[in-house]
Image (cartoon, rainbow, N blue to C red):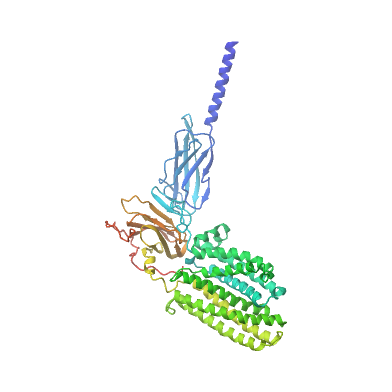
Length: 602
């Protein structure tokens, strides 16, 4: 019996152990990153495989990508495969960006016992070229936002002041016009027409204006968000991306703040009587006033920047009081005959509009001097400024004429009669229409570069390199400021191609023999335009000496790889170390870097 029981126990142990070993050797791939047949937007930085059970010491991952249809070649810019501490996952690092291509990943792992194990493969595709970090490379993901210099590569954010497009102009004009009418109407109601909220026509008018303002502001934010990210208009409809405007300079922050304030203004228009209620009047007028003030932050650069910001805010507020009150008179107050309160509204308008006109004109002249000086006839910005000034002059003339008629006819009137109401309505409607045209010209001005730049403008963004490749249809200029060690503002201006640009990257290679890292900056432009780093960031050039700049991009007619040349980075004292500058190897179609940069409309 002892022999029988011992033999049975040995058999059971052997059978259980064999099944456990078999279960341990029975393995499968449960997850991969990227997943099988996944389409990724940009090159992954790492390939990861996750298994159901632990794997052995022998493991291998290989990858091949298609340079053309059906032509897969081994992709060697990867590290050796690494096994995790729990033996359940395997990974490789992608050291160089995978171009737009289809890729196959083959893998093979051994069993924990050392015997041959599993093998398999999966595939994924990269939709567009991108820059991934190689050893000794710093990828500046969002130079405008500052932060960690070794962040993962993500689309950078342009400065909002450097982008322009039709939807941006339309959204800006509608938003500005709506805000001006809303704020000016509320000011007139508070100052001279407290009976206004009792009129259903006035309440409907304010609510309609608010809806127009909200629609225009949303369009403005959507278009501006898409532009600063280098995407089409459809790419700006994701509200999550609107936060990127906070990294696009003060114009971008002002646009985001304007949207928030316009939404809050709905609280006022739902009950306009809040504007005349002493307990809520401060908020009822403060919200639209702050929203109007953001208009004055549309251009914060140039000479006397602080003066320009103050003048811009004053100009926006005064313009809103003037134009908004005129529109309320033309559309509501003078819609027909009425009682004495309508007469008081017209008289009150003549009182508040005069200082508003004076402030509008004076602050506008400050901006003209600051931005254009005397060069009003020689540049596009100056000529549009002259057209705007002419429109304002016509507004003043029509407005003063209407005010004289109102003062003469309504000085002793106790009610508003039909003839005078019709005559004043026509005059104020003409004044309001001219004001709308002037606002359209103002939106156009934002898209044009002022003719008068700061005194140090020639040194603010010196041209580092201009790359022009006729075969690929690429024409762009790269500029840096200040050209010393530390954070440098980067500006990339693309003239060609007009559309279809992909994979644009600018690489900064440090001087030979230095320990500095190569810097790769992804430029989020897919068409002609300007990309620049934000006010708080920049490219970290940490070593003085002769650096090399390389530009890579793909266009509808070809591609350019590592085109560029050498440039010097000075130390803190502005001195460039005396060292042999490496010989500049310039592609045949690359022009002299000292050539003047091209002019672009953004």
